[in-house]
Length: 407
Image (tube, rainbow, N blue to C red):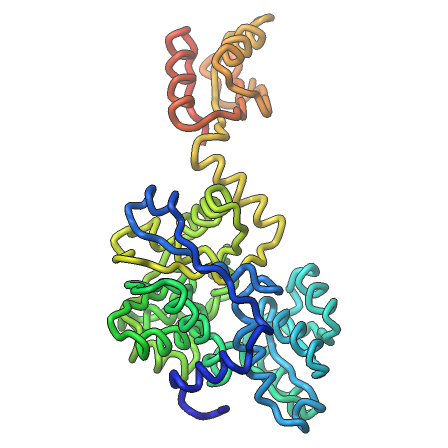
């Protein structure tokens, strides 16, 4: 179907083609998140695919549509993440040679996760355009089929199988919220959902640092690409511009496009791990981030697509630490005390009586003290949350200490 319009028939054909080669992931109601956010929320666990991402659907559909000659020659793609792993895994299964071009800065863990499936990995370029141009030349020189990660009808149709699944799994879905990078997933889901039930509201979510599709949809002036632009925890949707084909479908079929902050995305990753015990990458948590930021977006029965779970372990560690700080379970407290023997012992005794576990202690004699006869002691404390934090500060102040939360 390469080059043909994406239709419900094409998506259903893709679903039949994929069969049991991809996981039929659960779509389950989250009772806890629904109660917390005042909405009826269902989670589509695409992070439970074998390579932990929805990208397998589109990649596999594209591979299965190759003729014997193209299969023998092989395929290539530019990707630093989930698309690469999806192509590498299913290419290996089907005996199709796969060559992946990744930017030079790609974390070694992602490189190895792609190589483990037998794909050739070439590291080239530091900018998107440079790497993409090299990939195109690479495809021409070796006769490979270039599999675009999102702007390809067969890939879009494969991703659209997720929409058909969701409407079969939960009767009368009202809203579907989908993370958006290049737009392949939301384009396929929107075609599927709107064709089956035009009343379903399809909402797209982007990181506000990479909001090109939302800007174009909402007719805002987009930002020029810049190497100085801060990165995002949602690197899976950090795309400079949507595809030509995907944007046309988004404009025709999608109801609303939103952006979310880094704070909201981090909070969503943290909440999904704490409440649902499921690991998502930043992009995978963007749909929940939208509901955290604006609960009114979840109208009726609402499906949130958890697109993937391939988060770097160092990034996950940082997100969890920052989440503990944000929820006041890890608190930095500054207390000024007289610089005399026994002061620290008396202070730690009070903290111990208040069930505050001391994680770290730093004396500051030269910085931030009101007098040469005083010392500022900074504690990192493990607490139960905001309520305990307030009790500790109030108790210390009642005991005569100048105590305050340190930024």
